[in-house]
Every structure is written in C-alpha cells, then in structure tokens.
Image 1 (cartoon, helix red, strand yellow):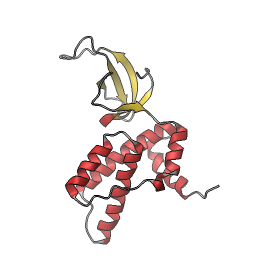
Image 2 (cartoon, rainbow, N blue to C red):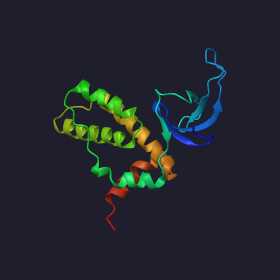
Image 3 (cartoon, rainbow, N blue to C red):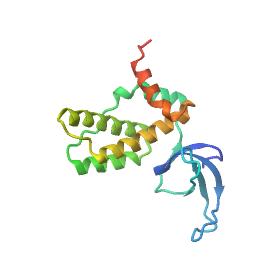
Length: 169
C-alpha cells in the first residue's frame, strides 16, 4: 500500500499525490472496499478514486531523483518503436503509455520525433494522432521527472537537452 502524502504514478492520471485511503462515499461504490483518493499533481482540482487492490490500474512510486538522472543520462540508449503499420503503431503507443514506464514514454517521444522529421523532409504534415501521443508521453514523462528532480514540469525538456549535451566528465 501507498502512504498518504506519497507521490505515485497511476495509469492514465499520471503523477498523483495520495490524499487518503479508505472507503469512498460515492453511490454504487462498495462500502467496505478501500480506495486511494488521488490528487493529480498537475490538475489539483481533480480527484481519482482507485481501489487499493486494483489489478487493472497500474500504480507505482515515482522514481527517485537518482533514478531520474540515470534515465536522462541513458536516453540515447533507448530505442524508438519502429512499426510501419499505422494501426499497429498506434496500438503499440497505447500499450506503452499505460505501462507507466518512463522508458516506454521515451520510446514514444523518440519515435514520433523521428517520424516528424521524416514527414517534414517529405513535405508532409505531422499526423494528429502522432501529436496526441507525443503530448501524452511528454506530459507523463516530464511530469514524473519534474516531481523526482524537484523542478517545474516546464523546465524538464531543457534539463534533458542540457544534460544530454553536457560533456562527459
């Protein structure tokens, strides 16, 4: 179980803070079942109620600052998802998003970034689907890294680029 006040990553909600644990008072919800009341970090007006024992929704602790820096330092070692078929690629993106794994989010970002470059070079526009998945992957990755590194979400992309361009010691 997660503790009240702990930051976790939860399925489609992204980074959340556990506000409380206990039964919820919502019509139709079982009275004896325990739920996490989660507050999405980047949408503090929202609440998510997730069963403590849910096997369908992935929940995990936010990575540590050390893990975040190590991940950023090894971004170049993470491969993109090269799938030519549009429908299979979209299915792979969906699956990767809901794994709640930073490495999977990086794969999506790298794939779409490279596809964008290829399409622009061919005189084509970037697809709306690619833009949507890119935004979702960046939102989740940057949100978690921001919490792990104690910075603003808007600062994360520049941090990643700066760290990637820094000379090796």
